[in-house]
Image 1 (tube, rainbow, N blue to C red):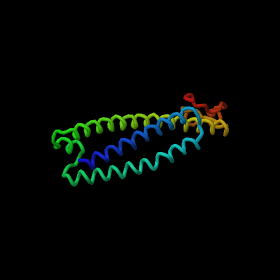
Image 2 (image 1 turned 90 degrees about the horizontal axis):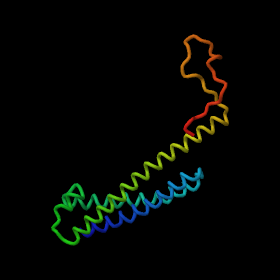
Image 3 (image 1 turned 60 degrees about the vertical axis):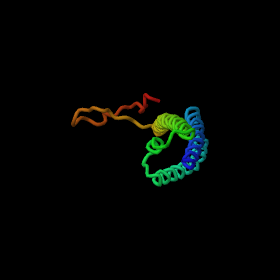
Amino acid sequence: MKEILGILRQELVLCTRLSELVDQQETELAKTLDSQTVASVVQQMEPLLKQLGKAEKQKTLLLAQAGESTIADFLQKQPLSPEKELFGQLLDKLARVSQKLRQAGDGNAVLLQRNLQYIAFSINVMAQAQADTTYASTGGDESKTLQTKKMFDQSV
């Protein structure tokens, strides 16, 4: 049980650090389009994610040795003790941090999508792209269906 507790502590520390980096990434995505800064934050995340993956593998191996498939099953079969209470607290904290990471990741995905839309919009403006009509009569003159206005995305 002590080995799994150690792994949970390690996972909590790693997830907390990841949460800080994700918050930093969100700030950078929201305020600037500086890809270098965002890339440096992602590079800082990579070793943490690798360590987290190794810790998860170790935890899975220890659970398999104990004959359990999930951490909840393992915890349920442990006798009542201060370690079991600490175990439950660590799991709760880890679940909260994981949920925060999921939400921040979803938010960052939205910010990235907006940045990609802005880049596509900028390319369209620089290329002076023209938009054709969505609906045109069949067999009509195509020169009449081409709009002379530039294509602008309303969401930008």
